[in-house]
Image (tube, rainbow, N blue to C red; front, side, top):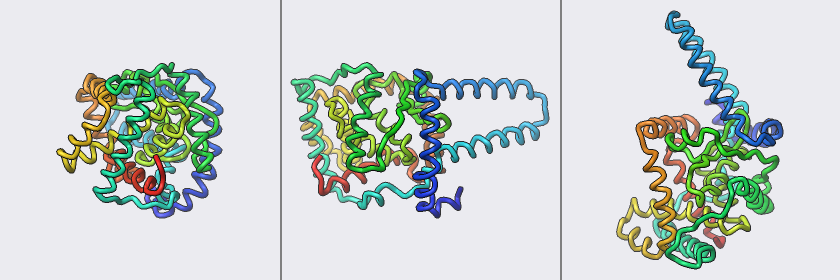
Length: 333
């Protein structure tokens, strides 16, 4: 696996744009039509099987159990990479878009101001009142269908963002995902895009678009944030646009807040109060599910990302701001 990291062009050509297309299309054709998450059922059965196996072999020599466990992990890791995770090693998106990834504080501030204006505009179109939060009228199943429109519009501009054969699901383990701190995930073994059905509805479209980006072969969290933003904001539906803009705005404001608290407070005053009411909704949701379990999975996933070509770990999610700013240097939001 380490050797492969030195050959991103090979991965891009032979795996991402070759073998993976056939694997993902086969998986989505096989499981996409099922109205519930088949992957969640597989995970549940595997966990039960592991518990039973350890119970049955509890009296065996620890060396035998260790070897058996390593055998299982090896097979799991092999299929994890074969079926999806080799996409971690493909050519970075910023190179495909021919843009840089560094920016100045002035560029961040300028972009954030534009983003505030755009988010305020869409918010007012929906609510007609700057103080009201957005209440989504969507049923979650309708969100799945509408998300395809944004990807269609995006792929008309960039063919490598083309999304085919839908396989989007509400996770059957949403309750547990909430306590683990996950808004969604891609099951690499069934290629189902799973979304936590308990997250605030205004944010649901952006989370879904992020997971769909993983499905089309992007491993990097920052790249999937960018693609998710693009597909959401290019959607014809205002609620998708709002989900995308508020998602990006929060990251930009946080980046400014880390560097200049006074500037953050000044910019915050220019954002419609109703937008912050939606942010408070998300904060209340996460706070209600904050336990030691969440802390454990944050640490686990942080290290998992670092082992898979994302050296910044969980901080890599915010790195999509780098791509956003540079992409929109010459384009309108």
